[in-house]
Length: 162
Length: 141
Image (cartoon, rainbow over the protein chains, first blue to last red):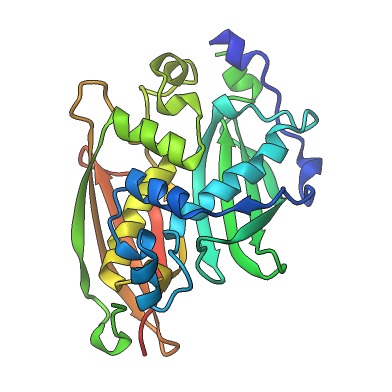
């Protein structure tokens, strides 16, 4: 317990407003979408069969709405790799998540994500970090805006001494 | 096929979704999503950070909640916005049976722009596990 709590320091609110360099492009593949659909138990053919997707008016198989977390998570890595921020992912729990889809993600997309720190605050001994991942395609057109609030548990003295 | 906006009324209930989440499902979701946080597969780490045990990825619960809406709407692309707050962890015991999830939803608003708002409820072990779970759905006009 001490190993976790005693090394924890509160997150620095001066990071609010910071944005990180765009990620390398993520290539959305049909099989990755199928793997994700399997993991969430969704058997909709437009996620799995290009012909079914085209019949429904899509260019290729599309991803389910929460697939955007795959690229969001990758974009968080830039935060986790920032030693100045000092975010320990094993202490992180997910508090809130939303997605605004400007268009569906589909196979063949090359997605680039830019992560922004929108808010950092402390409450009840925990740090709340609100992160916005702006996902765009190869031509720079917006695809998805993903907003996430993460809680870093037990970063205050109150929890550290518990 | 995408559901017609004209066929939907405020107060309509979506067909409920019952799902079981096992440790195997958590491992599968970890691999598919890339979220390898050990609190979703390692009992020791989960307890060290003060959790009652291994918990489901909040995003897996959100995915189930969103499935309720996409299945009803007739096309996953119909969900143009969705959001949730993870209010209680879904504890997934290691006894082979897993955790039960019960997802329900209803249409709370029918808008003139061809969209509807859906409110979603997710329960596990008799308690709600999501708060403010909503989706905006663009239907066929």
